[in-house]
Image (cartoon, rainbow, N blue to C red; front, top):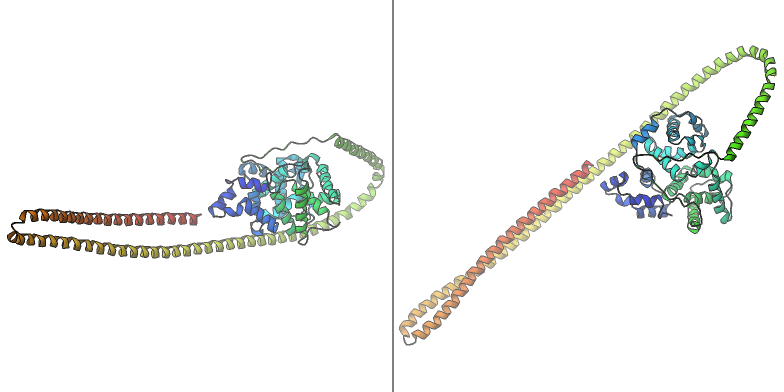
Length: 498
């Protein structure tokens, strides 16, 4: 389900995506790892509410082609889509205006979308989630059309009968059925028409994370609910888990093996415009014939209309007066609409301001935490320095004592040599007969003592050299410690600037 060909697998391979780069700078790369996303969907079946829009951007790998988007969105409202927003139960407002602008850009990108009466229902949930981020909403819908709705475009303006047939087959294989009147509303709106807001978001989390074919199993699982039921907080997990079981069971048998492909960077893909089938042309010819017959019938009514002309002329003045009254009422209604729209804008601005204040508070709290961490680190550094100084002082005292003992030993050896020389002089007077033998013996002893003295002096020099090396080692350790401190401070300053 989340393996090769899914959005999760595709997003985890793109380490250079702008969302992944920002996450690395904030030390949050684990949140956007493949394992973390899959564990989150397996345990909670959804993403966190506060991070949902960011995770969707990461999963869909939106390229943010600003130049290409501005080319499409800067054009006037496309005339073919002016009737499409009327299919949604929303009044004219800022949201409906954004919807029309988004529909217009999509129709300029792929003109046949103007005939898709299901397009507003598909767009509306994403428009509410991404808010005023127009390019993200536009590229999200384009990514969905390319990956999930490509086969639908072959049947414009009719429902995609092949997909609905596959959904019905999945439902029948598990003891139910998925009639078009129930499966098509769920499919065309990505469950926006048949689920509560919270449940619809959970369904979208699973749809956008998986391979495109998983949508068919979700619709089939929904159709197995009791007729007339909607997806709510009580049954949404059951619907998702049952769809996963069906998916794992017979995915290989499903002819839909499309894999997820993100939008390319630098340009938007061009979809082939499907030519209408012969059956569609025949239906259009029938419609034209019926309109011609209706026109002939209308001609026969012309005479009756002429007879009614006098009556209509009499009623015209009354109608004009009624029209003026209705116009006054309409102006009052428009004034009330403008007032309500202004209140809505004020509320939206207040929400934006509250969100900014919340972000500022979080930023201030993070700054305080960083400052406290730096102070704690400085205290730890001072403690380590004191411990190092005490250790060096202790070692210095030990080596000084050792050298003192060596010096005392050398002095004692010197005194012994002098004492022996005095004894030799005394014995020379008393023992002339053994002088030669005694001299040879003493020469040997003198050489031995001199060698010992030389060894003591050499060892003293070696100790002095070792002492100098210890000082140099300590100095190098201090310099390395200072360099590490400076490097870490630079990294902290860089992170704070980010």
